[in-house]
Length: 541
Picture 1 (cartoon, rainbow, N blue to C red):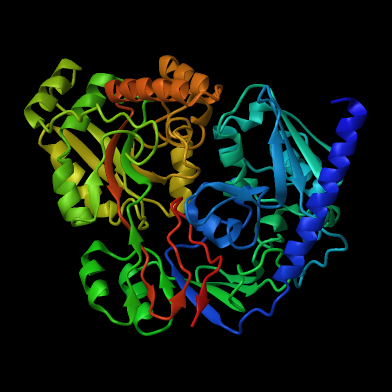
Picture 2 (picture 1 turned 90 degrees about the vertical axis):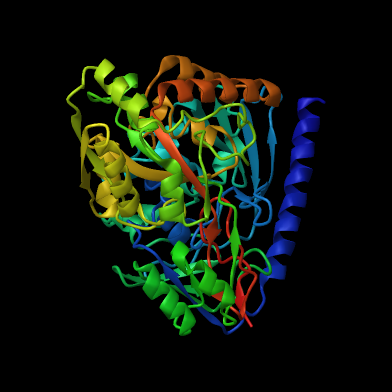
């Protein structure tokens, strides 16, 4: 095809895309039902600028409520579907992705911002250049970190972002990134308004982007009362039909799971986050409620800080690992709602190595290993326990107490430490812990999300709480990421899992079933396989 033919084809393609987008937008202009829903959520967000955060709390309160991305995860199966990009193409060498944007998409009008134009390529370029360029004016005015962007290798791999026209954006990569499209559907890639950012920058209020969000998503942010409520209005100008089915949506922040369930039963909220395992049986018998659950695409684990002694010694880590009675934890903490974890990702993830086995629970052998490592008289550690409930760990305090008791049998004295969750994560990223309980819910359905984000060298300052940078392992992860051949990727990921099991940077504990009970009159609610709570297509009868 000649250059002239290519330009003609692209012009026709752009016209067809624009027509399709306008048709979709017109179809979406329907009256939003006059219905309200209250969601009893488990914790307060650290803000609404998703690029800064890795928690499902912020992703639920912002990423999947206020914002959209170029591509989205399908609610049914997690596959990639069009978002703010109506279509896209990848170059034959796998190094260039071109996105063709929707026409007619409007940013939210709020009490603090009124847009004067529709969404276009400038917004996409701004969103990613802020993360990519340390000298970007907005980033200099509001200097925050972007852990996912860094941990996923995008900070070094995206060489250039350009916009050939107002509705086309092109990303050029230095190396093949096999799960690149899946990464673009994650909350950190939520598209911001450049016009709004410019207004904040001019006013000297760049940090407002974290507390007063403006997006294109199905719900418009109204206000946030700290540790109490977040209020949203249904977006009557949303670009996609049948997604917005609520006039108002409120997050009622309720940290106690017993109180959340009480509110649900009394009709004070219609959806709740994670109940206690002990309450599952009574929920199933309650005619007022729907028991919505599914096997969790998650992992609860205990990370060892391998950057400091004595946990830099693999023999010590092996001793601590085999002294933990994992099945006793499953019985007491999860009460039959989880399965034991062996690998650093769940069995439903492609690339899982089913041939790997746990080291046996063996306190006597563990004590001998400690002596072999020079700690015959035992040692002292600080064991961190999360202050909040998560699907992957419904009671971190109890789990910590059980591990503390197990370790005491081999001469390890563990002091249990906790902090408010935001502080907990901040300090853990800084490497202040010895060992800590944490977990992960899969974000994009690729082994790289587990093996790279939780254990790769790029993530040592982010999601790699073990602070483990082991070159033989990291080389495999980067090789797997840089090929599009699924068999070659699988072989490398399975080899990496075997290295993980030998080196024990963390102890996998459990893959938990996820429960989110809802009132009997709630329609369209689905548990998101990637750990967020989405109200797309959710309504009230």
